[in-house]
Image (tube, rainbow, N blue to C red):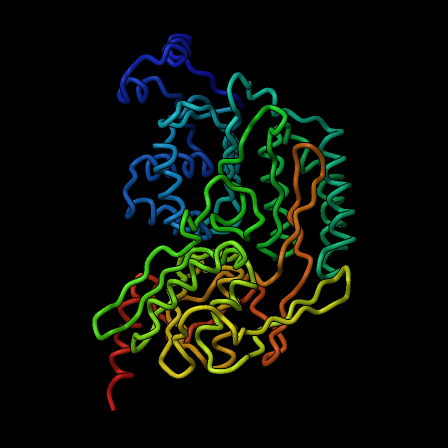
Length: 442
């Protein structure tokens, strides 16, 4: 179903006429369906710019998303004005919107899970100047080609061959029964494949993206986590200009505090992390806040952990299916700057949004009894990803390796890292400070 709004509204938008109130009056009517309700809730929360309202929305519908990243996206775009509803079904809605900061046209889609309460997979793609949404159209041959090539990439590279076969068989079966026939738009088709791959494989590192690259389009947000692994496509990094080091501080009681939102490549960002750790070296205890960290480089995990141990320590291994080889990750003795050391208390804060390499940092330190994990169980993504180009528009993220901890001989895939002290993420810092005060007592 396609809902168009009146000609005078189109003229007003083309001429850039009207105030925010006028735009609201001219906006298309959002239908009454579960997917449309999520779109309405997202627009209301996102456009408000209010952190509490946005947090409530994301916790309910998109719990994987990082609130600081969404706030950054809100600041970047200024919010969105709805222009058109392109397709509406009970669990799926596609729409056209313009961002308020630059009045750029974007195509968005929501795909709802069948679970109760439902969660949403979401993608929004900037079209670029003079590009019609019709340019995103795909045909049956394109859908078939994308699925066939994706199955081949999974069968060759996915970390678990048996799961890869199950993924391939399920995609073929769903295609045969017409599950993808109505997906005639690249954005929504990629979103549907992402939902299906994750439902079948139970792997949050699996995703498909679509980019209108030949039309100078940009991916505003991938359907993956808001802070996906470092190689995932996105236009805004969680880490910002300071390599993910958001804040360093000394809290009451001489407790050091480091908020890190990205495990960046240490060859590029090692100096920023080293500077932060050197500044906190003389504190009595340390809090490392990873509640809004979606991961990145395992090399940075080892780099940061090197400041928290007294001797060279084996942290983690990665086994890659294609080569059959195992890469070991150890702390370094020759790390630059001053160390915090291996004896003073360390507390790592986690949330359900803590993911991938951020989970590895918490898991590794917990395995060697070097840190107390405080907060929520993490997201459960332990498989490093390679991106595989399907064609000029579609890219498939394929987990190609698995972590093997040298102590536990397993990892956190699918289960997350269990905190030592379970509290809501919002209360984790206060709890860590209480624990640090208690550790000071004789």
